Length: 76
Image (cartoon, rainbow, N blue to C red; front, side):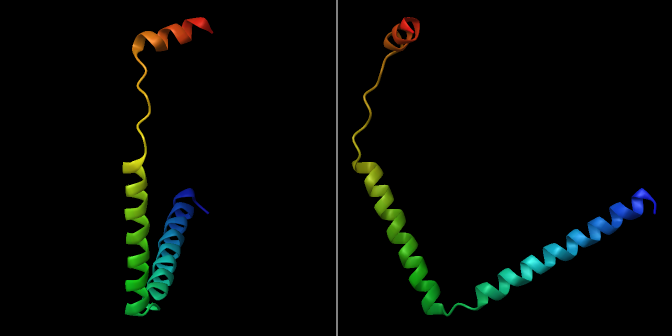
């Protein structure tokens, strides 16, 4: 078998495999009811807002100047 035939067959197999993955994902997505999708979106939104609030409430780290960094580096 010539190398270009093998490359062509591998490409065709890749296209078929990608199609299978897309179809499976679409079936899984369509299996949800609208209420389940809405509930999942509410959960994700609550997680995102709580994570953002935690970041905003965290105390900022003390800033270290260049001089202090150089001293620490040369001490090692």
